[in-house]
Image (cartoon, rainbow, N blue to C red; front, side):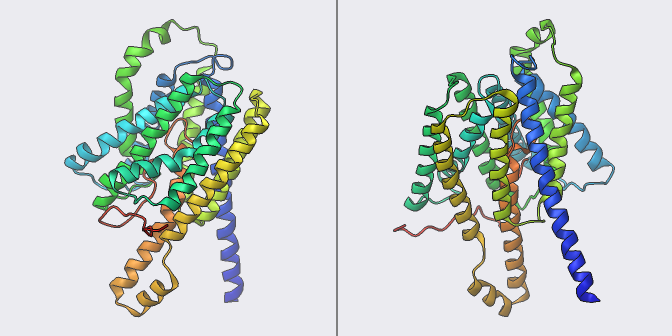
Length: 381
């Protein structure tokens, strides 16, 4: 009887995990394809990335505030010094990430942007190396060189190559890589762990405030003079989908393995490229397929190596099992942190609000350690 109930519970857990993962993939696709439609002058005809991003942040701020204030989600208290020294810079970088990432949709296809995002591990690793959260080694450098080479090949094969879009997308990814590293340095090192909803609760209002000045300077006058071809309901739908995407991440973290999440991320990226070709007529050349495949293999192997590096060895488990209660609890926390950090890192890129699919919301790579962790790398590697 107990075995039957255990199997039933396991099946229910499996269905729940893969259901949440399918929902995450679906919502990621909806947010990205809808934002592309809204912003592209030849489609929705609303070429105002600042206004779209600000509307998302306003919507997400209000809903996150309601969820926290009604007690449905519990948010940790942050002292003013933590807010000013940690939340403000992270929020400002996040605003830049979303703004410039959305601006790239004015010039580039969804398929090409997805290919460019394969280089994100390199940027996070490079920024982490500069700020001391990663240790440089030749092996990792070689893996990431493969990723960059693949992205360069894919870029060379791009039919619609617009430098303005390239610059916006690279700036967005650099801002995101810096944000992720600062999250680890400024928040996680202080033991502050936020889930996707509480991240929105604290970060989205900061993003909104940071967007107001450039919005007033760059878009407001033209926005009021613009003849809207798009129904305002589509903008509301986009904001709703973005918030729902964060909620799906909130439900997903901890329900499946990091490796499964990386595979799901690859499937999502390929699906988005296909949808871009099918719905928006994007052209993908054979050279791009070759370059993207090369970058994808390198990025997946890099993520796999990170998962292995953060997973406790059998010897460590045995030692902790025979050790003190504190050692056993530390091992458990480390293991859970490893899984959750990898999942959130993959999910986080697109999550918070506007254009990112795999940012995956704020606060990827959650760790309970008091010090920023560095990945060990043998000197001769």
